Picture 1 (cartoon, rainbow, N blue to C red):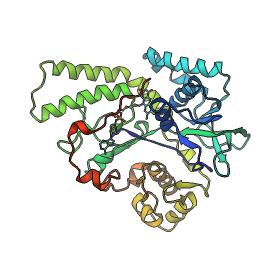
Picture 2 (cartoon, rainbow, N blue to C red):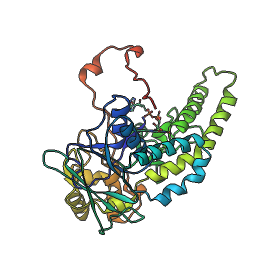
Picture 3 (spheres, rainbow, N blue to C red):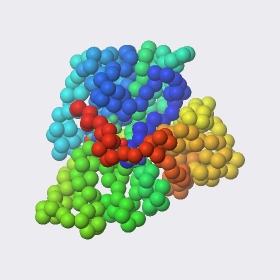
Picture 4 (cartoon, helix red, strand yellow):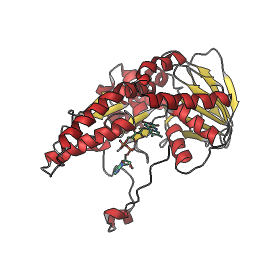
Length: 364
Ligand SMILES: Cc1cc2nc3c(=O)[nH]c(=O)nc-3n(C[C@H](O)[C@H](O)[C@H](O)COP(=O)(O)OP(=O)(O)OC[C@H]3O[C@@H](n4cnc5c(N)ncnc54)[C@H](O)[C@@H]3O)c2cc1C
């Protein structure tokens, strides 16, 4: 099922003009639309620089970049990236474009708040500690028409969750992932998981793992397999191992930082569908909510149209922090069908497989 985008809430994040980092990639690459300039780009991970370079190339203006990671964190990824020269070259090209455009990059920094009346007007950036909590020492203010912000990706594991497959929490893989064997089998016979839905590991791993899981599923189902299937399985395993350290290094930069979640101010909206604030979540826990589903019943958080896809990961972290328990113990919201809003006409219509519109992959 791919991944969802994570945004750790801050005051003003629901203002018109604030959009997701992953969402902006889609707007830029697939729809060829440049976000309104000047733009501030903030969050963590390689998409920060990919998006900033993409906006500059398309003729937009980036006012500033705020990266939660430090320059030292990025240097720490060099040994892993050295094994993937194409990734390293791509990253250096983005950095060169950003330097040439003289865009200030604030490392180990975050958006403290976004301000505006009808829409976004100003973005205030400040430094954070190594763990991600804001340090009240200085602020920099940028006038901006658009703030692009993202704090990593969360695996889309809704189907295994709905079917009650065994799930585990792995921060480095982006969150809750189905428990898998080495060929992508879940704990439920006939149910397999691959790609971002089995853990955030990037496009190359997703392709190789997808092939491996497809061949395994065909073999388990007793379908005829190409004579080369065993060598294809071996090759897929080798490719996954080859890109592993670079994938892990990138995923770690995007992993959720508990200290950042803990510093969400009390009046900030956390569940934007139901307008539930940090304060209401804390009070519900003080009143006895002991897991994520109880919290939902107490406050309605996660009950809106997105069904917790936007806020679930952050609310689980808040719950774990407040109760001083680990993330696995907090649990996940119970999944219910339909997983996505579907119109009745789509449900009762007659379709051929070929009728399904498959978008072309976005150009690099
Ligand atoms: C904005 C963005 C930029 C990225 N850039 C890079 C990059 O530069 N380099 C890199 O290595 N990786 C990058 N990645 C990660 C990379 O895109 C993923 O690792 C890869 O696409 C994962 O493949 P996948 O098949 O698991 O998921 P996807 O490619 O996301 O495919 C999942 C598919 O499942 C479908 N789906 C979801 N739910 C349902 C459902 N309930 N029923 C039916 N279908 C469903 C979706 O519509 C989608 O077509 C990026 C990711 C994002 C979000």
